[in-house]
Length: 339
Image (cartoon, rainbow, N blue to C red; front, top):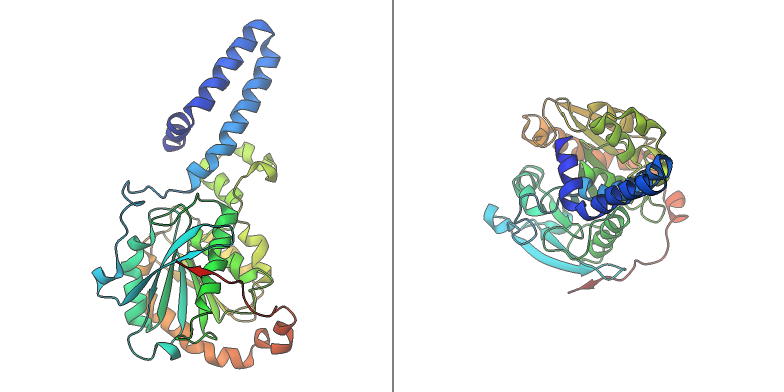
């Protein structure tokens, strides 16, 4: 609660100050009812605009927008990539490729959480590279790290689509073995991409870790204000309605849940798993928290087993009915520009 109040006072002090003074002025000139109406409308506008500040933390720690740790610090071979999105923003990515046999390996698109930048996830990604033997495309959202723009829900969805469109243009990977990985907020981004009509038949698999059902649900968990139960959906600037979308997810899916997660309730991951209609889905419960589930002993072995089982699943899963998927495919992909 203290952090929320501090954000409102420090980051939006102008709007808050104007609202308070306007309310006081109206109170003494017109009356308390008008003053209350002015105060309510003003604070509603302040809270609406504060939502980005409460959700996105690209400056945590403070140098995250200027310094991004490079994969070479972990001995990983990589390419630094910048691509232009369809709305004109350049986003920063790392492509970490296996040194031998990369064209036969699976490729992960990695979506990180809401704080810092992708370089802070390299320790985990190093584990993916060595333990799973895969290629990884790390995506840095707009407004994060060295990417241009300002964070937004719709913008993140565009960034995810741009990353996939870039990846399928490469000839040095197996484009039939591209799968998504998202942790926390990144899980919501991965779910949106995997359930969007144009893209949902194009992925080998989806893995989401410690992700939430929606932002309105998270608001009730974090703020614990009963009043939020009656707040209309239009009030939320960012929604990330993953529970609503998950019923359209048809790719084989692994849900990873830290049982000691004190930020995102484990029940949210269970709800996503329960409502997912993929013919082949798994729920992995680990004793980790929100940011350290990947340090659990069984983490990488469980992912290894999930990926090993996928070829057999693909042969028998109706999700891979080519006639069904062809109905949803459009010829070609949007062109992206490497800069």
